[in-house]
Amino acid sequence: MTRNLLYAQSGGVTAVINASAAGVIATARQASGEIGQVLAARNGILGVLRETLVDTAGLSVSDLAHLRATPGGAFGSCRFDLDPAEQNPAQYDRLFAVLAAHDVGYFLYNGGNGSMETCRQIQAAADARSYPLRVVGVPKTVDNDIVLTDCCPGFGSAAKYLATSIREVGLDLDAMTTGSGRAFVLEVMGRNAGWLAAACALAAEDDDAAPHLILLPEVLFDEAAFLEKVTAVVERLGSCAIVVAEGIRGQDGQILSMQDRNQKGYIQLGGAGEVIAERIHACLGYKVHFALADYLQRSARHIASKTDTAQAFGVGKAAVRRALGGGSGVVGIERLSDTPYLWRTTLQTFDDVANLERQLPPEFITPDGFGVTDAFRRWCRPLIAGEDWPPFRDGLPDYLRLQLPLVPARLPPYVP
Image (cartoon, rainbow, N blue to C red; front, side, top):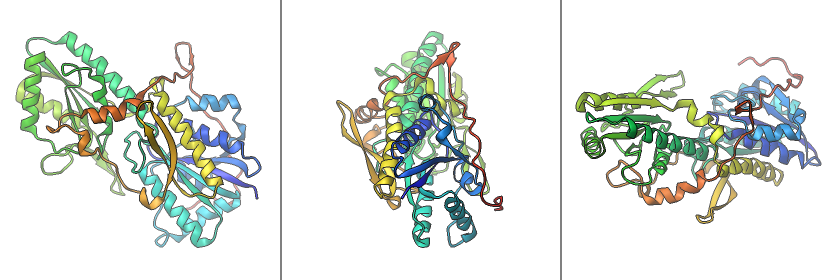
């Protein structure tokens, strides 16, 4: 029986999340005998509850190729968690009313480990209600912190951008070094896991190249040891480049710097780089500049990794095929070899993935805690390999901005 497929994007977007969307849509279209309409919700699960859906049939083959090369979340994302079903049954009544009204038999949610919990909740509720639905999680996150997968789509491109940036900054720093000494601090994303900060190490071809020190959330910050390291680098080279993950913690285990906390307790991080820069200047007297990569690191499609784009598209394809095969769970990536880098997709259960975080293992961190090992470099290098340039027009990337009309609503407006 032909049923419709609904796709949605969730959480912080990436440079390649739309490649996953393109993979979903292209593969679903090939299954016209089993899948009817290929719908997408605006702004993730909120779009499902609000019944703000679009029909992707309006996208041409050329549009899909354009979508694959466009950063951001073309269908809109959200940071919204469903309540437990027993605490808010009305929320699930509305959710399944929308799914039923549009004859949705497949729901694919493109997000991180928190979004996989949403998938788990929806699949469990569908089973409890005997509603025929296959839910598959499509992984994405620049943080690379989803468990049971070799890597997460989105990470490779962000890692490539950051490693490129710190290599370029290192050359700038070398040129501006004076006898008085100076330092540069780059703050990158990484709440509890230091994968992005660690990836910056790929920029250094020897011990004298930037970055010279990396501060990871997995290692409690030791200020005295850190300042000693900075001093040694500056005395040897005249300058020091440091990468700081936003979630680094002090010796008391508390986050070094945070900006705000919302009503649900979600902490917005930021400022760790500035704190480190201030400590260097106050204690050592060096001139210090700091930068915050922020959205730049996750939206830099102009320097996307070819491996990353291929994997993002691949997990989208695999999600449709798993759903059609009766599967439910989270698509993962399994590494088959390092050289050449070979991989395939897997399917993990929601219980084994949802709300869990994958941190850097000890074998990837140097004994002093201020860098990464060759084992990490061997693991990471294939993920930033290759260039997948977007089309350019008038000297700038030519990205797609979707303007698909909403599917007519079939239910009353949503009232939370």
